[in-house]
Image 1 (cartoon, rainbow, N blue to C red):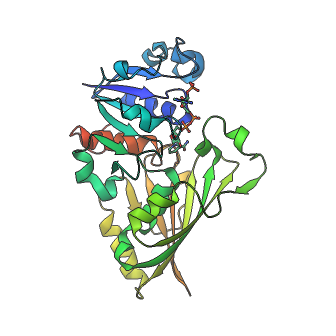
Image 2: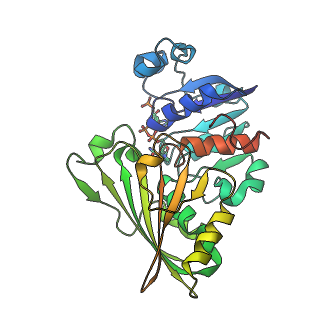
Length: 300
Ligand SMILES: NC(=O)c1ccc[n+]([C@@H]2O[C@H](COP(=O)([O-])OP(=O)(O)OC[C@H]3O[C@@H](n4cnc5c(N)ncnc54)[C@H](OP(=O)(O)O)[C@@H]3O)[C@@H](O)[C@H]2O)c1
């Protein structure tokens, strides 16, 4: 059994992680941490865990010495706090914040599975970045530039999302040209990228409409078959319709489809659950690779 710490267990991502880890046959959850609820049982904060063994686990202080008694730590804490903590950790680390995405092994199994399997620290991709990169990755060598328009449910902003966004009956664009995820998208695709996120009044689900400007003309049949062969394993699938978020919410899947042409190139739509493929389930994929388990262990 692999001993696991979930650092930031009271957040949206921490909670999604715990639900998946609880079902994983090779995992022993040894430590859960919080900054503001130390000493409380998890069930006091998350009613859904009431009456389960997980609900009785008591939230601990975020102490590197305690975390290092585990084999791996999932860091589900705000940006800017994870990297400093990771510097004091000797166990393996899967960082779900943005802190180490450009410096550690990038945890996108569709692109870096070999590197992830040998990594000590993995930077789990951002939710928007996951949807954008997966929408374009099979065409990486053909890309001149990309424009990504993304829409996310409000859980993408964490449990205090209501303080950040007035999302009731509203559609909000933000960080029009300088979102935190832009550098990792550019690094993964290696071309010029424009990316604008929007938030809507849905709890979870994330859609990316990708406009891919290609160096040469490719037929739609060639594109579709390229995506199908590129994504034949794993949780990302090319579909023959225009995907919508409902088909992936609550699942570890990314669906990519649409595949239409306009005068600027190709239009492709990808959808994920921001808390799953955009965070927790992708972190479990990375955990599985790092510890030599099947990629899909605990996720189906
Ligand atoms: N939400 C998503 O869809 C999503 C997707 C991909 C990546 N992420 C990233 O994953 C991380 C967690 O996101 P989230 O949505 O779960 O946020 P959240 O709901 O706001 O939860 C944040 C967690 O971090 C803890 N925390 C707060 N301030 C802290 C500090 N200064 N030091 C250490 N821990 C602190 C909180 O603990 P207490 O409140 O108990 O003190 C809570 O457990 C963030 O870096 C986020 O960007 C989120």
